[in-house]
Length: 64
Image (cartoon, rainbow, N blue to C red; front, side):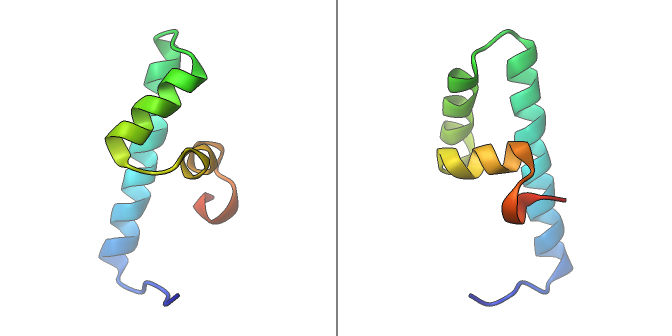
């Protein structure tokens, strides 16, 4: 897989990941369950459950 070198694309992906983290935090602060929050994020962003989990936990290639 080719590496992305365009800084605009890298920045937009980082902003999307931060938006996912912010939405997750907001849902959890509202007293929602983790399963509910993950399902909402899957519907909104179209990522798999494992990808969203990695983004939230900042593990793998999603750490910043």
